[in-house]
Length: 115
Image 1 (cartoon, one colour):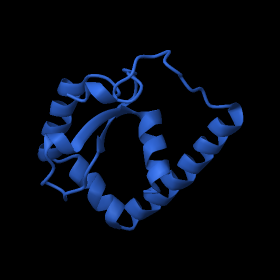
Image 2 (cartoon, helix red, strand yellow):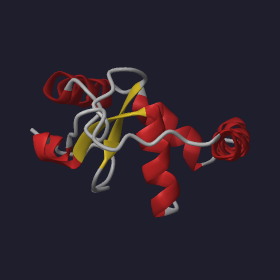
Image 3 (tube, rainbow, N blue to C red):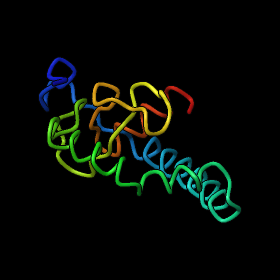
Image 4 (cartoon, one colour):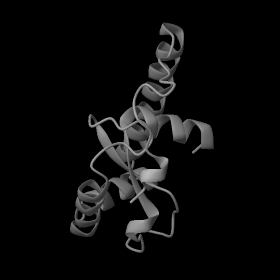
């Protein structure tokens, strides 16, 4: 388990300012529009979306949810998503490559790593 990366709420919780929240939503909306366009034209994002519906990914995702149960960064149990720590390639992921994060922490990690 990733207990060492989990922290309890209240240990320096960070709440974004309204401006930061607005910037986050604006950036996310623009990226979402780009991905929808890519999906519609059959680009790589569309292929990745198909992979996310594969039985292989669904099995892995369910195993990560069962193992982690909460966001491994903030301990939230809401809007959980599976995040790749390492990208080995589709159908090659191992459970140790994946971690459960809430939507907010997942987006924050991707924005920090410039995905």
